[in-house]
Image (cartoon, rainbow, N blue to C red):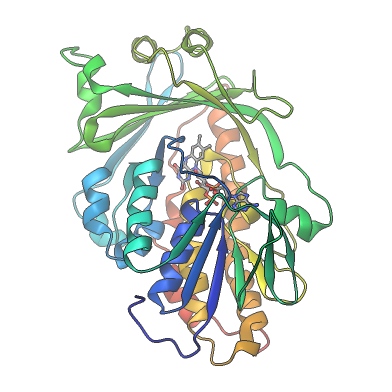
Length: 406
Ligand SMILES: Cc1cc2nc3c(=O)[nH]c(=O)nc-3n(C[C@H](O)[C@H](O)[C@H](O)COP(=O)(O)OP(=O)(O)OC[C@H]3O[C@@H](n4cnc5c(N)ncnc54)[C@H](O)[C@@H]3O)c2cc1C
């Protein structure tokens, strides 16, 4: 059961069960709404790797009562070190002291996407979110509103929240034609190295320290690589960005031979090269890196269907906020729907959601592009990840914003 009795007993339909869709579903259910989620995959895959979940997003998850479960699978980030690509000279070293959580109001986690997804899914099931798998939404009736599924079934609701990811077909429907997201020209190689590979190695073993977790970032020469321990030190997570090789055209995620990863960085800092020599033989993936040009509006005509998460504001990983913004979106829309006093108000609520979220997400999409540019310069100077955004309290903002047109 949702924990609260809402002013209006809304039927909320969520499309897509990724991090954004699930957070939205949990947040809306906690407000007491009836929540149904439609997901096209028949089962959840565990693709993806480490994510940084900064305090702007972790505060939402903690408020959902997920602190303990996420502490169990996540690691608190304590330090970010930027280094020169070729010799590992430290360019900047940012330490987050013991009271960082007190200052920010919530933890800075490094966490595996699959672990975060599992925790949210368990919460959704516990509180009575209805999740239907293997159900692909083909298009929408904008006025009803309803979702038309493959096979002709129709799902009707008071409001439809669409989180169908960065290759969103719903976005194509809203814009009148489907367009692939903007290709950055770069790709990410992602891999997890098991901790046993670093054992008894005096140089590599200290990288796995989970009590003083450090995120290492080598930058310069048109590329960057991030590395940090995740899953309580079971794995070292590596993600690099370089010009795309296999992920041009229609290919978005492709398994690669790890030797290509090693080869790409063979002239870099010897410590990094030593790490790369420990790559597993399988499950090294190349991801095409794309983001979205800001949209003018995320709301469908009729005012009862809205895009959120990557579907409306996909960003480059160098923003380290894609999942974070999806989590904020979910909290914001739930908080705003909680202000509904009669069903006819839903278009005003969705417009208010857009007023609150579009400028912030647009700014962060741009920060992802700017970070990548700075970190790839020949004489890159180092820096931080986008920490000025971390103190933001999305639920407070959603409670305080004036309703559109008021
Ligand atoms: C290399 C890399 C590193 C990253 N690092 C970070 C980081 O450090 N921090 C951070 O916050 N973010 C990071 N991100 C971004 C983050 O992973 C994404 O922004 C986030 O997972 C997107 O979630 P989503 O729910 O919006 O979309 P998705 O995860 O894509 O979920 C969309 C869901 O909708 C379903 N679906 C699609 N079409 C339909 C349909 N027609 N009907 C029904 N269901 C449908 C899909 O099957 C899928 O389950 C990173 C991304 C990459 C690639």
